[in-house]
Length: 315
Image (tube, rainbow, N blue to C red; front, side):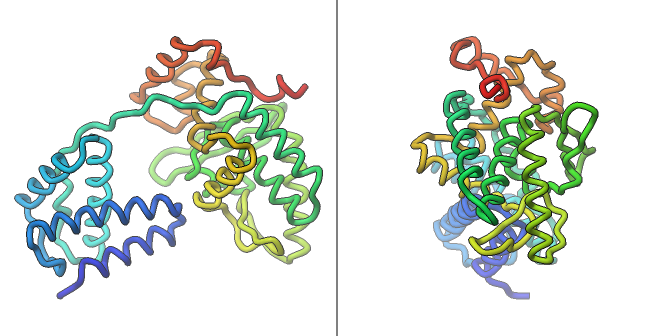
């Protein structure tokens, strides 16, 4: 069967969008696949491809090494192409994934660059003011954003984790709340939330259920997507979370991202002397994951890397 590479790449990117991948993630995949197309054009190979040999795999590896100086850039482009060939494999267009055996350099981790504690306090204060000064659906959106903030700084969740949470993911024990994180390929685990989460969540949950009732909607997702007039769907996509942080950066003129806020949470746990194995469990990483970069940054600037749960600052 004859097929066009560009058409299949567009199908692949559309699938990523449908799966809720963020705008930037899809854009990066597109750039990575465009790089592959450039390689094929450079080798004068028709984009209506029907095979990709082990020799071509090695040539592409050399092409990437020559074109990009960063091992992480090479690694990302190989991973993008590997996933694309998995997609082609699923459509029975290839008998196997030719990228499976392609060796790449191990990922080089960047030094942590957390948001400062003062920026974190400023963001939380802004979000609280927004809730107090708004009403109706606008107030609910602001209350939702506080929950997003708590789940990242309070529990160290990734943006991709947020998209899959349900109301039942928030667990209540005798004293505090925990959030249950579930992944299809590993056992679920729960992370404790700071005590400041309780009041904010109780307000959010009651308003959320109230507005769902008014709109006659039945959603079990913890977060939601909305326009100024109504809730559109359950769940908040990674792109939706990115837009929230973009808005915060514009208003407060800071550099906070979901990633920098999550890194601040890791430093907070280190300040609290949480066992490293427990931190890794809460982050959802393997026991072999190293916290060494965080420990090194802490040694360089112990005063600047002091982070606390917000109730200490807002007692």
